[in-house]
Length: 408
Image (cartoon, rainbow, N blue to C red; front, side):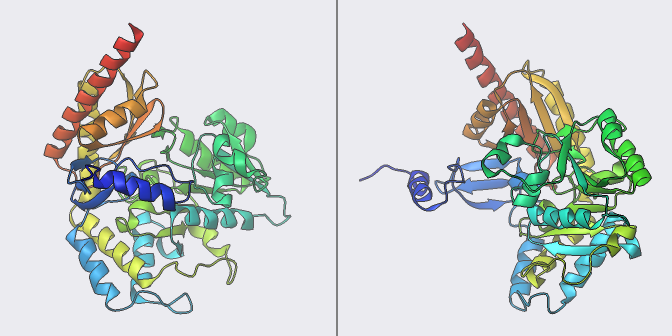
């Protein structure tokens, strides 16, 4: 009789059936509840990644489950030849929580990459009266998605290399105010950036950067488009990260946490940018479907009802203070805002720390060799944070000890 675990069996099936663009799974998950998940072998894990900042309400939250079940029994899809009540409600809700107000407009897609594709088109439409605005600026080491337009915006040459040539007209600049001042002129249609660089390791922008970007884009008639896909929906201690800065953008892109795990994305425009698109210039068969928009409404309503934006501020401070208090020699700095936390390591051992944590029942992420990314559900409790800190301390100690043995 075989002693092979169910996970090993699933790994074989994964390798035989899934496209090789996907890396082999670390574990095979079967169910979740709150901030915890279980694999097919019954092992329990504390989830401090939340589907990469997606599962805002954790797993199997009653509000999300009820919304899916109720709406699925009514209407799932109708195409964009028709409107539905959840679609209109969600558009109005996003205008309200973003501050876009009456002049705002919303376009719905199915993912963050699709939202950024819509933003790319919005930028192209801002050509100016003489048609001179043809340049789009983005930041080095930024991540905006893997579809061809979003990939062109992504400032990671290694991800682009196999798919060259990229869509022309995009330039990647250093993340400095000096680079902004050198680069932005009357030929720039838009500047697209993340308020915090998530895939780069949760890296904060330099102080005053966003304010300088707003001033320069306004001066030269360029759009300021903020990719709030990872930083939005309460993740960074406000509905959207830009709301902590005093800056108002021309547009934001939204996805990930908006529907707690159900696929949906959106482009929200502010002011004059809302008049750039005209009928037929963009669309999506599934975008804004009644099921996705109903779920997003339920998730956003629960975040508001339960005070989870405020909870992200309090719990995020507790996590960052706790990591600092560990006193690990591996920790160089703690970055981020709210419940989007980055840990910069002194050694290139992030993957080893992440693996050691997984072995001990904790899910975190290593976006690069010297950074950890921590993004628990917005419902995370103090007890779960204490458990996380204990496992992280054990994992770092194990990796530090192994590194010392290797050095010796």
